[in-house]
Length: 435
Figure 1 (tube, rainbow, N blue to C red):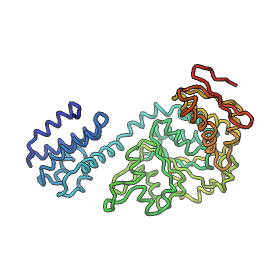
Figure 2 (figure 1 turned 60 degrees about the vertical axis):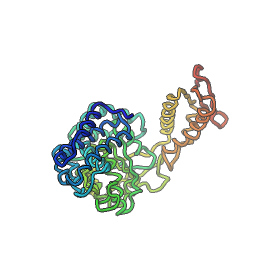
Figure 3 (figure 1 turned 180 degrees about the vertical axis):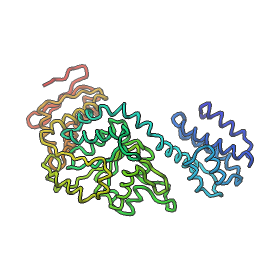
Figure 4 (figure 1 turned 120 degrees about the vertical axis):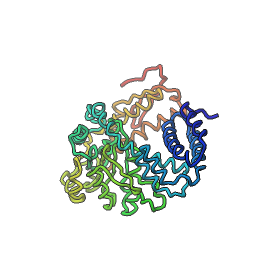
């Protein structure tokens, strides 16, 4: 027997008591729309099977009206209870179309997305005082040798969140430039993490075709097959308007997409293939680029030519594009000395994961130094360090967690002796040898 909240049960009884006639149609439809909206809000309290059961009950009642209630009348009813955005969608339903669960879900979801996108300004204002104060110092603990880039990003975010930026713009729009593996993507992730907002990443190499790229990004017009699917970008922002949006390697997107990016930055709004207005007012837009990096030998830790990067950006992007950015943020190549700091960061992340499994890890200075040497890469920057820690530290420990001495937790001490990593394990109540 399904268990529902008292409110749900009362409304079911009310609807079941209605004598379905043309005269009662308006009351029934209005009640139905409001009730189904309430069901959506109670998703955490009841499971999807129960929701489907309730919706089918209501739809049977509604469809008993046959043609007594037209789509036009339905539109007027929806407008009367202030579902203004949903009204536009209902207008598309023909008079002969019977209302289905799919129709109903679509209409209500459109309205909820629209309202959420319009009302999130309140959340952004709250963000000013709760998350931004220590933003710069917190990020600097996680990203090394990029203090100038971090400071520029945080200052611009603070200016716009304080309401001192231009109206009808995103929270901020940035272009991150520099070699691969120096922290461009990581800064975008850390920004979202510290602000406690969503993170959306799109790989622009997947949008390198003119027509298909536009369709994938914002969706197809209503007349096209599968137009209800929408676009990857627009759907993501409708679902998560308060977010950091990362457009990775923007130069790989087809140039036909540039007008869309200009609209995002200029008016903080674009229209998707279905005619929906999608707002970017509560979004931090970050685009990354490797332009100006002449070859793999100047990536990551190697020397870079800042003038070459500046010239490449100026040549590739139009003045209109650059002028709409809050800042072009340049990332420095990483110096080899930084590699030990990066090792410590990855080991701290590993330690935090192991803590949840009641496992304590200690790594000797010799082992850390060897990891930093193995992780030094001119080609991949800091990205290689993650793989080095994975193969040399995480893999051996994972064997012990699954089948060996760490199944019930414990301590692990890692050293580097005779040209190989050495692991010593002990039980939780025993101390770890420190060196």
